Length: 113
Image (cartoon, rainbow, N blue to C red; front, side, top):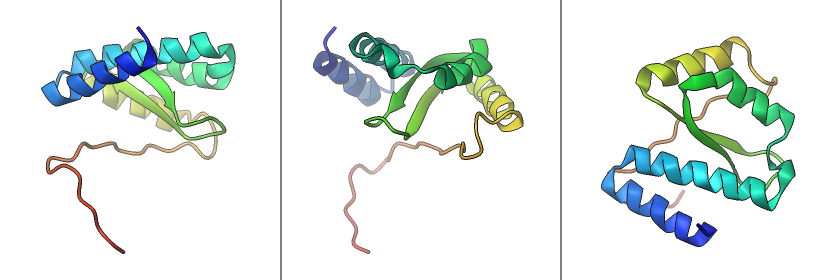
């Protein structure tokens, strides 16, 4: 599946509240990224996946390289707690931290600061 089609699949899964469908689209996106550039998954990133172990349902790097975010989906809430605990106990580096991702229930809101 092409990247554009996969993005449509991910968007539809979000709209349906289909967690498994979204995880499948994220996994496919990660496979596509790695097919484009074998350096996409460096040993440091793979070590985080390995630390998460079988609690991880899917994951991928976000952004355009040079740092950024690692999006991870756990198999369930208990698995998420275990992943977080493992990575907090043994952080991959001194800058690593968790950022909570939430979807808006109200949709797009524009504000001014």
